Length: 208
Image (cartoon, rainbow, N blue to C red):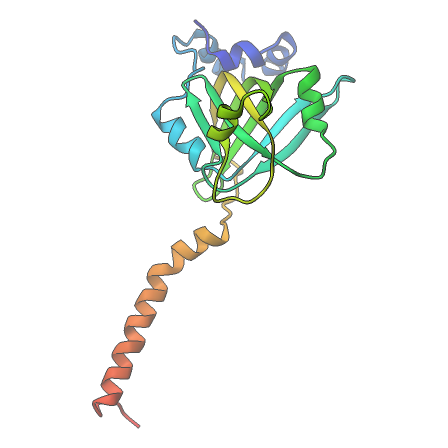
């Protein structure tokens, strides 16, 4: 079975572009693969559930693509099973462009970034929009009790393809929490040295 990513993405026009720019042969292995790459493994699950944001693409009824950022606390994206992810859709600017697009065309594509480690995971899938009045137990699974943002709906995505992207051109960026973690050993060492200096001065070992 060919790689699901190639089945979805390698249209005739894409193949023509690959031929023109000399990458067709290099890309054929996706189509010859025995691994369909349409299930979430243990590594992907850990990666997905560690993310605090992602980018989601939808297509409008007039054919225009739309990309929106979705965010929340780390772990707000839930892996429900090997072919399904879901997340609580929090109240935003109330334009509902992505929601409207998905009501007309359920297909979506996601990019999940890990900037510090220069990694990105691409997902393709079909989306079901759910509401608490219809499926309260599923909404409860998607909620983050410690996060106070209002949940307006849930989105459940059936995964059709998975692809890891190369790290080329990804500039490392760090959140405040990630910076704090990186400099924590430096701060601890600084505190140890300051305490050591203070102790020596109090014992009269310092110099004037």
